[in-house]
Structure formats: C-alpha cells, structure tokens
Amino acid sequence: MHAMQYRITLPADYDMKIIRHRVESKGPALDGFSGLGLKAYGIRERGVDGSPVNQYAPFYLWAEPEAMNRFLWGPGFQGIVRDFGRPAVENWQGLAFEHGPALASVPRAATRHAVAVPADADPSGSGPAGAVEDALEELRRLARTDGVHSTALGIDPRGWELLHFTLWEDTAPPGAPGDRYQVLHLSAPDLARLPRGRQW
Image (cartoon, rainbow, N blue to C red):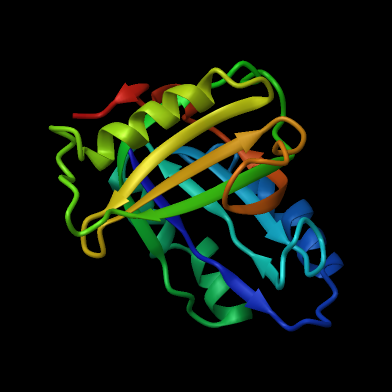
C-alpha cells in the first residue's frame, strides 16, 4: 500500500461550489481505475470545522505503485495541473490499514493527523520508545470505533512523519485530532486489494 495526497489551497473568497461541481462531474471517472484502493475527494471550507482555509485535498491509497504512476502521468492529474498549477504531491509508505465498523457505508468525512517521530524515539517500533508501535495501537483502536469506515497509517521516512488518515461515515467525533475534511465522493475500485493489518 502507498498513500498519497495533494492539498490545493484556494483563495479565501473562492466559491467552493466550483469544486463540488468538479467532483460531481469528474469524480466517477476513477471508480474503475485498476490498482486504486481508494480515493477520498476531500475538501476543507474556510470557517467550517475550524478550517482556516478553502482547500481541495484528495487522498489516495494505492494497491499498486504502478497505478499511482499511471495516474500521475495520465490525463486526470494533468487536468489538475492545467486548472490549478502543479501541486506538491505528498506520499507515505503504507504501514497498516484496517476496516472499521462502518465499511459498508459511504463516508462523508475524513481526518488527517500528521505526527513527527521524535528524534530520540526508536522508529522501528522496538522498545518502550517505539513510535510506530504506538501509532499501530492507535490505528487498531480507531478501527474499532463506531462510525469509522476505514483507517490507514503511513510514514514519510525522509522527514520521519507518521500520518493517520481515517474515513468516517458521517462526522468525526469532537475529540478526533487532525484536519477535518468533507468527503464529496469515494472511488474505491480495489479497496478489497488493500492489505489489512500491519504491512511488514
């Protein structure tokens, strides 16, 4: 599994109905994209759920890295580049993925929570300072939480950042950490191919 996201921050007075229409018309194009585990078409709206910005920020979990490459060099991503400029594409190695109790639902919300691995922590997860083991335990806890569709954990070893991404059936609970997104559409053609549990 490989995780990927690009976040396009838009002007404060941007009409987010434009993005909603874009997702409504173009989103289903990836519903059959082979190798894509899931794509959550996420947005943040200034003043909603504490967001300080308007943002279009889709999140991807890839079952095949080759599929990610086909997307990035294909017409779909080139449409993003044409309309918004070329965004920085963040990506993380997949560490774990789990289904939640609400997997059969259509998720309407998501949370993204990035956590730096402390410099004095053991990133391998062994010993009492195991940052990855702590994150895996949090993932397993989240996977048992009512309203969770699915949840993933990734790591960027370049900056030693752990990323928790969770899809929610309706809304994330008030105490859930991280940025909150509205999910306008979910493409999940190869959801069943995303390996569950720890991935090493």
